[in-house]
Length: 280
Image 1 (cartoon, rainbow, N blue to C red):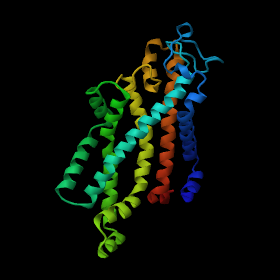
Image 2 (cartoon, helix red, strand yellow):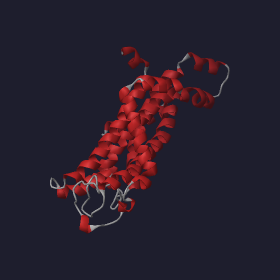
Image 3 (cartoon, rainbow, N blue to C red):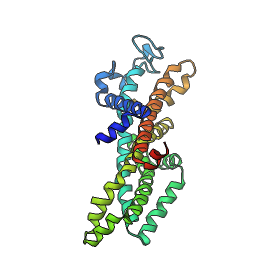
Image 4 (tube, one colour):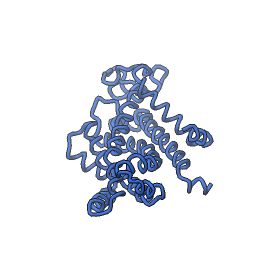
């Protein structure tokens, strides 16, 4: 772990991404304590609606007079909750399927991988929109739709790694000494296949936040008065371009957060992928 952190510290973009991710994590955990108007998550102050950025309201106010700065801070918790839940569920589904399909050849392996290929052939956003429309608009529906469309990415990665490791010398040695299949798969193959999974998960957190914001923008995710970044941009459309701050700051929150996860994921990928390291 210390070696990874040492290598990561020499990658400036990756360290910038790590700093952004840690900052967003702090906002998510301590948001109600940091936000100047934590009650504005669901309040209404019509006498101060659509105020431009000022000392009292650094990001201005929205159509109901709520402090946008506070709502952006409070929205970090919802964004990270969705991302962590979706990626976690996708890993719980995709990793075991990838191990099963990669280690055991036969009809079951072929069935798993053909289903994976079919799901991967459809753009995730399109499939998530289709699934979300079948359910009532809510954060839970958005998380379920995203989870059902993201697991194939982990299945494909783990399948490829398991296939590669199954023919390794140490696996042949384990079979020779009579090690059981579960012991080989879970104690030896899985730990060696985790590096690309972690990289995929890190990048996936940012992508999931972006797709969840799109679902919220289209009215298929979070519902009012939730301080959701995508929902805030959707609500601001009526007041553009006069109230430019209404859409600008939630949009910047999405941009910076997704960029942070992508920079961190790229840095981790450079560390764990020896082919990339050798090409530098």
